[in-house]
Length: 56
Image (tube, rainbow, N blue to C red; front, side):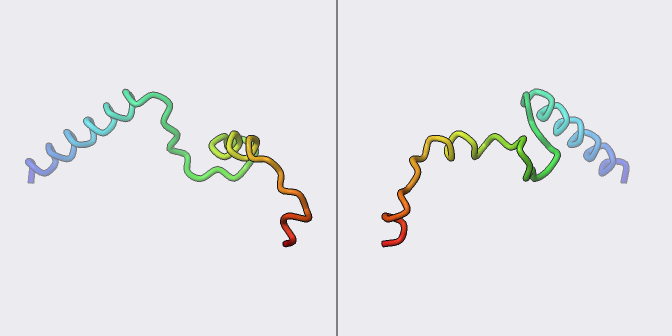
């Protein structure tokens, strides 16, 4: 049983070490507000489709 506890502690320490070295890792979950930035450049660079072309 003590081997399992030591293994868990070592695995947790390794995971924390990797997350700390990773840089800017956001573990807060999904974001749906204005502060999301992963879709903004793609949406801003896409040209707007004219209304006539969209209805055809």
